[in-house]
Image 1 (tube, rainbow, N blue to C red):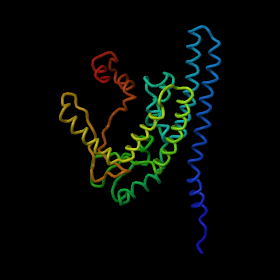
Image 2 (spheres, rainbow, N blue to C red):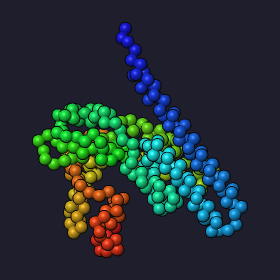
Image 3 (spheres, one colour):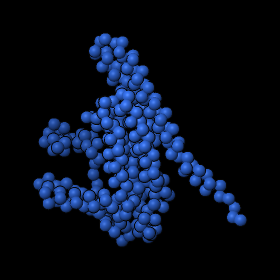
Image 4 (spheres, rainbow, N blue to C red):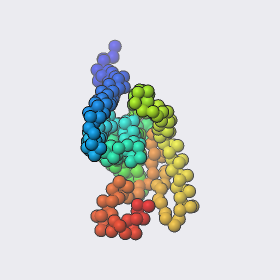
Length: 284
């Protein structure tokens, strides 16, 4: 009789309990944010001065923004995607936008050992056989995947390797179900808007993002379209390495650049007049 592998049993138990743990964490935080707003509505109703009301609302939005930021950054998964969607000026209070916009590429990174397993399983070869160098620390990590800089054997140019976080699809489906239940409650009690349909559309669209082959096809179509139709103001789209694209791995050429959220800082660093033509072109 083979000996028990207690670590394997512990890992399986932890994996099976993870959806329940995440659901509990979400509902505790969501209820806290919701009841905070409901209690605030009662308090602010006793204030007659409009300017004071506006100041109080701003403070409440700031407090809620901190809690939403903490929930999205700590839970990750679908909540990071929500932060990216909701963190827009036309969809949320300004205080929320200021906090949530910083979460675009700050998802917790998956340990390299787990990334290596996904990569080697998808490509059918070891990292050492394919790459001459492979940066262990990712260039960035988002809700569905993270990207690493690497170099093929016998090649002088760098590539970017996008690897899907292991187990992220199941995790996101749990998150989506919880958000849909909360959205259904809100539209029945507080908001005269079909939030549930919005979350169902989000579920449909996000489902596409787990297939990197689909993403690769879209990148190639966009690259060809921009090359043909946008020659006056060229936009560079990374070139795909088609034999290195699977559902969970996508390899493309490395292009050095500035993240769009850092564009203002980069313009100032280079001494470019923020009101000049170059800055205006960058904004455009």
